[in-house]
Length: 226
Length: 230
Image (cartoon, rainbow over all chains, first blue to last red; front, side, top):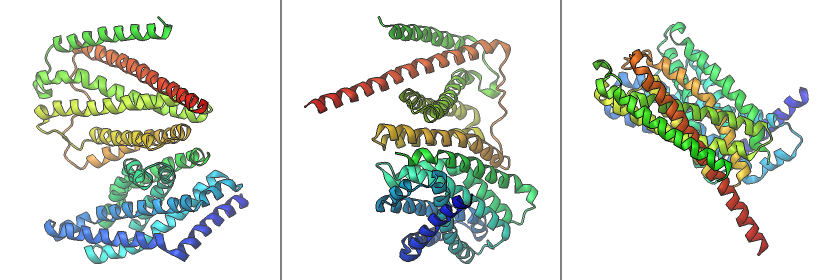
């Protein structure tokens, strides 16, 4: 068990180190996220009243996370394929599930880093108090689900002819229930509504993470083998 | 005539008969209540059958995808998967269109964000993505493996999507009533005949599409032989 965890840690450390040195993924994800927030701010400014922007904030948050997240997922797998390091991973005596968990964990960390920028920005531009603990819970659960399913689908997408373009087509319909649940949880927490009103959405998010994350873990073998 | 062709011919003949009977009964049973549309309600005899086939096609593809990955990657399971999902996509589009044709006169709207409709639309997108995935992969073995994995994920996400959209809708006004569309005993023959007829249509289409896929395999093999012998 220890050796398994050490292998996962090694791959995650490799991903984090490469990213720290070049910072290409974080900078592109971060810049994209900030620009999308700006676009939404202008889009809603034209027709939506101040109260409406408050209502729209959970949706905007999750749209930004989804799109920036897909950018990151694509880049993280594309870098591996382009540099041939994915073949290196396949040749080494590592259990395929360890590769999946490590990649998903790495993607989760990168998405969380971008969310750490996005949340304060939304507080500033949309004037909504998004820095609440329950919102943090919803963000963590939603990101976990995205990272798990997204890692599997990004690995598939980057092996096709269409590469990057394939991931949104594959991922968005499958990720929709998680998106719905995450938005509902964020909205409930933002309104300070009692947990009984939106607790079932939290359970749905957990169920989605476990079910689809589990399937992704089990089927990753078939994507990686040649 | 080969045995397989004889079975196909027999099945097609039986299907034609059943479909004709279903159409006849759909138009001869008593007209429904005005609140479900009066004569427009007759669409349901086809709408339900089409929906049943779409769901069946997805389930069959789910099972054959699992079998493909589990039982040593046999091409026949992959053939059933792709044939079934193609039919499922066509019937999915048909179920949405037929639903819209009924909804416009009865609910006075083409579309509503009711859980069943939303789930159907999302599921349709997922399976269209499946077909796009297949067309973007050239290597047959990799194509079969990847699309099997995606079909499993797709089918697993359908119940989650359904519950998500169902809970989402409890806050909004609900235009759709329950699942009972007011079928009296006299209407049941039309419904059951339609279900049986469409099931047979699915079977005939599946066999046909699978045969086309097998012929494509043979052509690819012949091509390889000719190219390698030159």
